[in-house]
Image 1 (cartoon, helix red, strand yellow):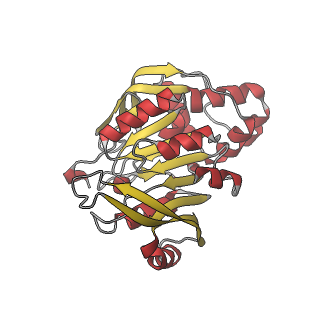
Image 2 (image 1 turned 135 degrees about the horizontal axis):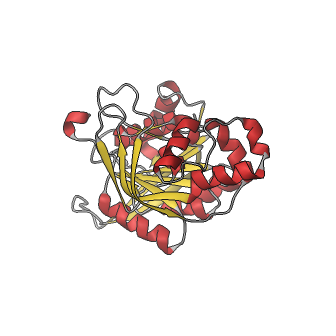
Image 3 (image 1 turned 135 degrees about the vertical axis):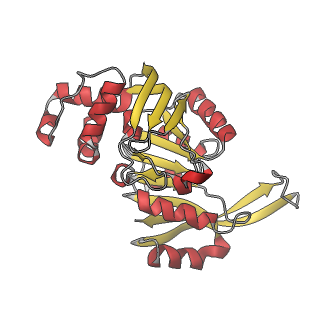
Length: 170
Length: 123
């Protein structure tokens, strides 16, 4: 994902990148390794941030983490070039994927890279272009996530989810 | 937390009209060297709120690092670029707090991570 962002679109190297809902920091770390000048990772869960911090330290990459709810964070727009994210899909808390997308399009000045369920493709495109001010919304490719039973609310042992990788221009 | 991050953060407490810039209480500051990129600095300069950066450098114990005012012509100077680079990217607040300029509410910083979670009555 980050590799494509950098090699096809030059959206990472030398840029300020924000990872919304960074979890263990994977996307932020990848951005840093691919040459992002400054990376900010934001998450609401302190345990994830602890792990993310450790990961960044182990890999010797400097990432600034912020402990916050993405809805309540106010980031001064022009400074962030690119937002990368693997947001919650909105299966537990309905609409959380859209909240993330809305915030991301407000903050990014160059591009937003995001993952959303393929089943929501038309809704995402329409909402991004019509309501969130996106100039363009493109599915770069379709992926299949093999999600193992990770959380208590997961009922099946494993599920195959079709996921779109999107590039939005704010 | 770098001053570049501080330059993007605002207090979003309900009722606050202008939550930027946040005040900084620095209890532990470290400096980590990173490679200077003149291209990056020249590109980011017009987006930086200079006053907030100067106040930040002062709060971090470097009151004389930056000129009070700056314009793009200074970017031609290597000395200015080095100072700008140091303030923006090399100084880190590890422990301390960010302070809402209107309400005085403190957002603690631990291990370099500011806690910007709002309480229920602040949303």
